[in-house]
Length: 315
Ligand code: PGA
Image (cartoon, rainbow, N blue to C red; front, side, top):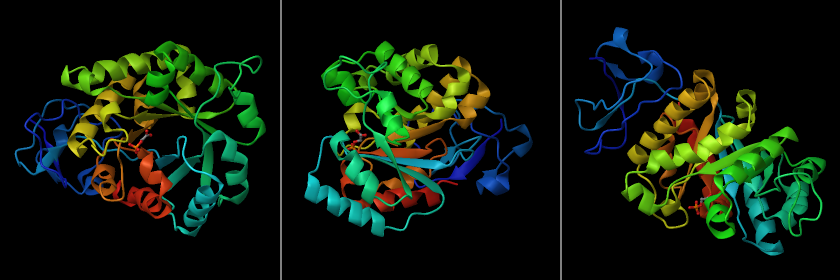
């Protein structure tokens, strides 16, 4: 039996992860790991617990894509607080290892665009499913492109739950946004009830399937998947690194099955849900976590900068 065990900061839970990562097979030196039988390392190892309780079993690691952190400001802020946030972000030093994208409320986007340092890219929090027209209150993908906004967040659980956006609708939104040249942070994730039923990966697969059905394999270059368990969003209840890693690896395995091994390997998967300056490091160390989508803590410039710089631990 081949086991590559990697020093982790977390204890292995009773139920070991069902999937290992699919990013790329790395040699023991790159992994900084103890290798029991390196010659037999395979791309997928499932349900394999490390013999050492404090170590987590991995056969592969993340690392092909640049760590990517999004700050989802949601429907928060006013002129004064946003000015302060921009000042704090501009003063922060951001490691070159990370791509950072800030998503202010739509009405503040132009102001933020003219004041926020270029080390941060900008995103909208939503856009319409098709061409603009008689859609009161909506914003079209073309309008974002026209305003040099390169990113959009789609499928956030708040929009799924509060606005009633369906999986298919979100898939179509992704397709349209990408067709206009936008990059998408596409959010997926299960509710507490679904997790307790053991349906976490079924829900993620179903939500991803709608996107897979709507876009081409090549379009995945323009997509970052944001895995955000609904029960962890804004609750202060963060998924443990082991829980997050297990689901991220399951998502990557699904992408290999539903699209291709190369897309599964290249696609970046953010974790979102109560990420803060205190828990980002151990989450960033997980091999299938390629970044974060941050809500509450993105409203605090100092905390957000710390979270962005946790990219240093993702190697
Ligand atoms: P949170 O939100 O960090 O406040 O939990 C994350 C999100 O909804 O993107």
